[in-house]
Length: 168
Image 1 (tube, helix red, strand yellow):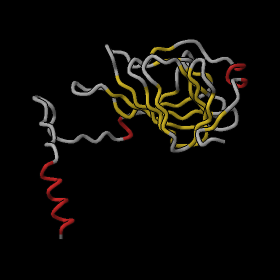
Image 2 (image 1 turned 180 degrees about the vertical axis):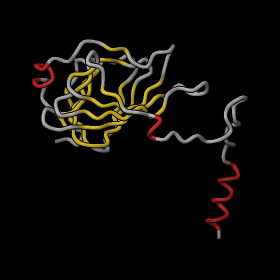
Image 3 (image 1 turned 30 degrees about the horizontal axis):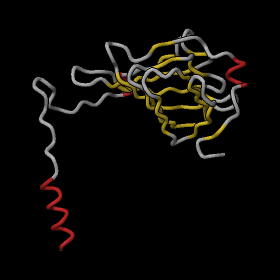
């Protein structure tokens, strides 16, 4: 009984949920998969085949955008950065990620990678494994990504010694 009273007391003292912003929709919206067709990544921004499925974009009330990206083995992004950083959640396969000047790291299902604002990096499948991830980033002044040069095959395959996220 004491535990129940403590839980009820904690709920009563919890901060109130924020009010709905003036003019904001008051109902949930479900975006069906057919409303978000997948597209193949532009050759200017990707090496190899990457298929992008948009998940959500900005609204008048939010700055975040997200997408699911599937990379074939050997496929990767070009060097790029995000003005508000990026979170990557690996959902399938094994991949590589590297920040400019840092080690190339192996990433696995369940890994969550945070790249700080403005840090140039790339990510994709390994040379022998496809990889899929969900990416979340925020828009700043109308921009979510700044694309750079392609990652060369030499850099992609011959980067610094690998270190996996689980210490192997």
